[in-house]
Amino acid sequence: MTSEYLDHIFNTYDVDYVVHGDDPCIVDGKDVYESAKRRGRYRSIPRTEGVSTTDIVGRMLLMTKEHHLRNTTSKRRSRGNSVGSLSISGGIIDGDQSDTTDSDNEIHNEKDEDDVSVLTAANYNNDEDNTSVLGHQSKFLTTSMMLRLFSAGVKHPEEGMRVVYVDGAWDMFHCGHVEFLKEASKRGDYLIVGIHGDSVVNKRRGGNLPLMNLHERVLSVLGCKYMNDVLIDAPMEITPDMIASLKITEVVHGTESDDGCSDVNFDDRYRFPKEMGIFTTIQSPSEFKLHNILSRIQKKQAEFQKKIERKKRAEREWFDNKYQNGDKNASNGEKK
Image (tube, rainbow, N blue to C red; front, side):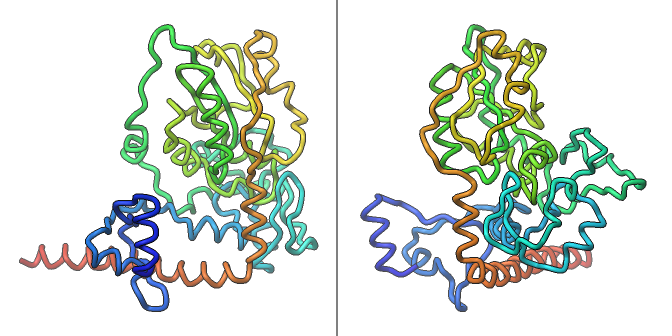
């Protein structure tokens, strides 16, 4: 980030400060933000530990499935190819199409139709069908304090407010999602966003999707100013009891979807809202989808993979140094 570039963004976009997490950003041995720091226009903020764009891009490149439910036998089989194919709704985006481990039943067992999400997965283990839950391997540690921080502005709807409900996966929360929520929020006074669990999303999309687990997707949506509240691990089917409990006056669905194909269960999902006359389909303002992100990453796969491997090493060193130094300081304090 050169002085010339900083002059450009400061003057063109009326930027006051350059902001980054408290982890170092070193490229070719140099601090990327050195010039901004010298000017006194750099601010550091504590990073949300365990949430890493480096890790998420790595999931796309390496096809890791460790952030949601998977069959342990397929885990051993799939380790042969470090880079597989990007799968969405059963379709393949480039990659090695001979790798058949990215099917639905590699993620969830066909004979078990229960929805197992990151929230409920901790108690789920079936030795008979060799299924285990790998959600706990995510580096993101969800605490009540973390959720409270991200939910700081959430308030209950007031009496008489028009409550609008939308649901989806919201995976890799992107500009298409933001634009849609903006439009949906205009239809009422209070917007509730339902976020489906990991296994629910995977049954619909297959492969290693969702790329972000439920906790990560919840925080992403909570960061959007157009929502008023989120429904965590939302049911796929919207029932009369749910409508009454949340005081929903309208259920909204967009014309664009990250599923990439027609929803065969669409009528079942929205049967009750349709029967009650509160279901509305609105034109999605953006055609941007998860597919666009995956395609961009795939096109520069080799370049990104080297970069991500380098950044992962740097992040690991940063965490090790942070906590090792903390332990040493604590030990020194005890000795004193």
